[in-house]
Image (cartoon, rainbow, N blue to C red; front, side, top):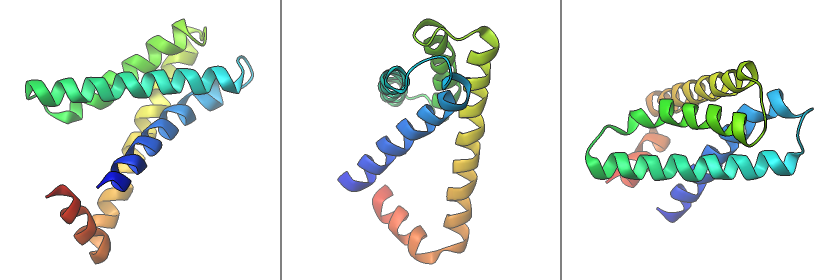
Amino acid sequence: MITFCLIAIILHYLVIYLAYLPVSRKDVSQGEMHITSLKVAGLSFLTGFIAGFVGISSSVGVPITALIIYHMGRSQLLQSRKQAWASAGIYIGLAILLAAFLAYLMVTNESFRIMILQIME
């Protein structure tokens, strides 16, 4: 269970970082992108925790995280509006691709499905 949570945290951070990378790599240092990505990941997990505590569906986390990416891109990385929206759009696109890939694995790979179902119990 701990390994699964650690993988989820790292994957979430990586998706956020990859959303900033193509847009901001020429304007800011990688260190600034890493710090901003960590801040966004932390706020995103906090949002997911609060949503779960209140009883709201966890699927609300993706658009909220996209808005956090937009806001942090504007304030921390000094992106233009167009760049910030591009980063948010890249995040949403990567999240959809990751969800589709996991759904594909759930359908086609029996051992993966059993492992996920055991973790979800």
